[in-house]
Image (cartoon, rainbow, N blue to C red; front, side, top):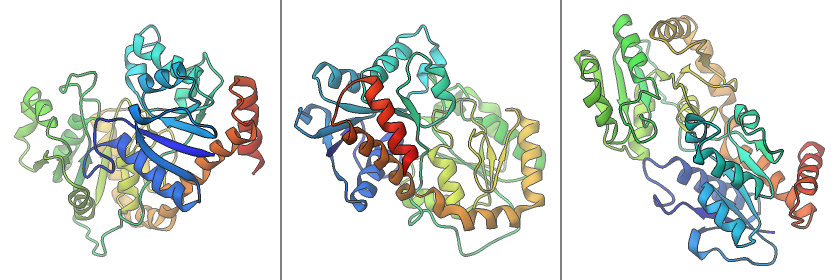
Length: 336
């Protein structure tokens, strides 16, 4: 079977800086090739129906277009707006239609399976990390510094604190710790709406859409990672996994247990403070756990699971029915 990863057309692949979905497409492609999967990347308009071909799409409108063209596809659901706007929204309905039209679909947070309760085609697949690139620093220090790497805002409003910048900065201020916030330039609009946060003298902003090399250096130059987001469709998300791979214990929100992570019981400044204090009290042990287990979360390990999705589809010979494909997936996935 030939797999076509369908590019979004929004950001180049591979991205050198911001572009989460584009990074996922690139990592899927390069790691699946290591597993001898016949896979390539194509732009949306270049995808045509071919015998033995399966498209893997990452946007609802692309998926619906594939369905209208009778092109079999797997759909990866990344759109957190479907939850933000609710089940009566057009965003939710488009994503549900994309799932229903798919052979099978993938989500990257377990809670989404229950949220899209109008279909039985949705299955969980974790995100991964390039453990060859995101490596820990050789040097260690006991002088703690905090890091947040994120693209804040929600639904076109850059001032909505989806990523928890305020909780992180206020926690740093209470503990008198330096904190760096990095990410794309549009984060500047967040701070335009929250100018009081700029009063903290130990806050450093690096909102210049850092390259991969610059982001790696940020991870290696800090000791603790904060990710107190209140809405994510990746659990864990890419930044959390990159921090983990670099040996930064994490204080944040994830419904999947990760090595060296303190899961916040609630999203408040005090909860972040408590998390930082808890991590600092057992910092060495938590960092060592990350260094031992980081390879378990590599993209190659994720793509070994993804390959089972593709193998399941090949078992039914592209019979495009919910019952056939779901049963074949379950047999293939759990039978290995």
